[in-house]
Amino acid sequence: MAIPVIDFSKLNGEERAKTMAQIHNGCEEWGFFQLINHGIPEELLERVKKVCSEFYKLEREENFKNSKTVKLLNELAEKKSSEKVEHADWEDVITLLDDNEWPENTPDFRETMAEYRSELKKLAQRIMEVMDENLGLPKGFIKKAFNGGDGDNAFFGTKVSHYPPCPYPELVNGLRAHTDAGGVILLFQDDKVGGLQMLKGGEWIDVQPLPNAIVINTGDQIEVLSNGRYKSCWHRVLGSPSGNRRSVASFYNPSLKATISPAPQLVVEKENQEVEDTYPEFVFGDYMSVYAEQKFLPKEPRFQAVRAK
Image 1 (tube, rainbow, N blue to C red):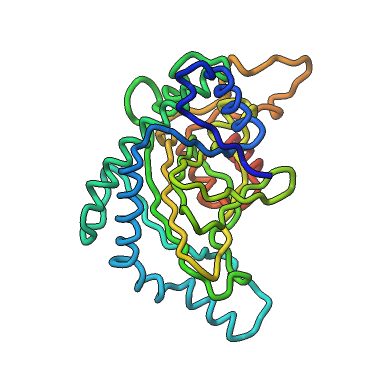
Image 2: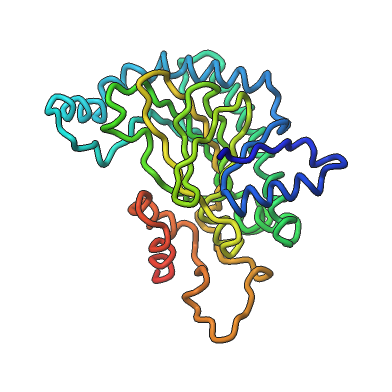
């Protein structure tokens, strides 16, 4: 079983209805799908690969070798213990925002990643418009909900991660299983080194590397806004003994002040239905406070916890 691969360019042609249906199926049945012909220039994607790899070698590799996770893993391996490293991931990561400090020592990193982020933000907004249409919502509904109105207040962050070769992949996770807290996630993953898996029907399925594709997955807030039509999906990264897996994930999330609840058009009144059967209304910042403590735990209690705030 392989996750859906969708040609995004066909939205503009004779196969528009078929492509819309494919994206709807990707959101409703999978929570993960890959876009090809998505409009991001290949030349830009090649530059992103280059600067991210150089950035890791120049500015991150030595720090990772001396990190707490590496020390913990080596200690467990020396004990020949069957225990796993429980509360850490075999991941080196930085987050890029418009207003935080960016790496300065890698040539062309800032210019390339700023250009990439601008393109990805536009793609995220196009995907949200497709979701609006597929769910029968007014155009711009999800974007407006995430921005808390008509402004440009939504959170847009980019995580640049590397998963270096791991000598004992059976003892540590690349990244522990979780759902994403936010909205629409756009991942530019390694062309060759795999490891990302999603959970479907109780089975872990590889998200196969596909050169220059953009992997889309839906976060918890899309699940709430769609009133459960589109579910956020559990996913994880496995460590690998060979290859340094690159992962550039961009997150279009609500503003921390945005109020999130199921779209009224998608809430069907049922006789004797109790309030607890539907998703709560909450401020996204409150949800993030709960998520920070419960990221790797079942997601349903997160919704209940935020209901109680």
